[in-house]
Amino acid sequence: MFISTRPGTILLMFSQLMRKYRKDYLYISQEKMLFLLAQYHNYSIKRRMLNYRLAELEVAGLIKRTKRNKKHPGGLVAPMTSLLFLTRKAHRVISRLYKGVLRALNKDVREFFAPRVQSKDDPGSQTLSREDQKEKARELATTLA
Image 1 (cartoon, one colour):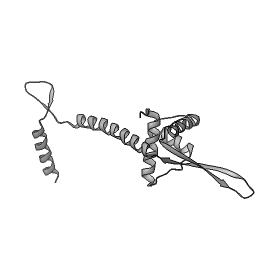
Image 2: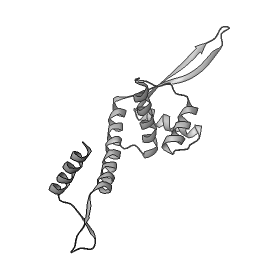
Image 3: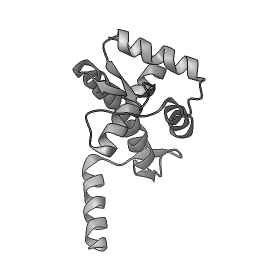
Image 4: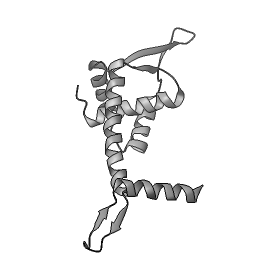
């Protein structure tokens, strides 16, 4: 199943919050969701679009929402924040999203930290062989120890 980037961003936010608070559920307000998406994920949307995205995730079977109400004396019923649960399907999608992100990050990190040396024959740089990289790593480890 393909999830576009934006609902995927919402799923990742839910997963991060569940991991942070060590819960299998969330009861986060829509205002807080909007703030976190804008602050940490660079995804600014209006409340209506958030509700559309949550409905898409629910129809796709990735989240389950349970509405909560609080009864006040005198018969008044006040709505509370909904409980949000991630389904098994969502956990599989999230793991695929994380793998893609980690794969891209690892590639960038490897390219950034690849040791380069100037060759006398070639004015450009070339990467060290695997054995030379291991030797440099051993030298660095002994100097740091």
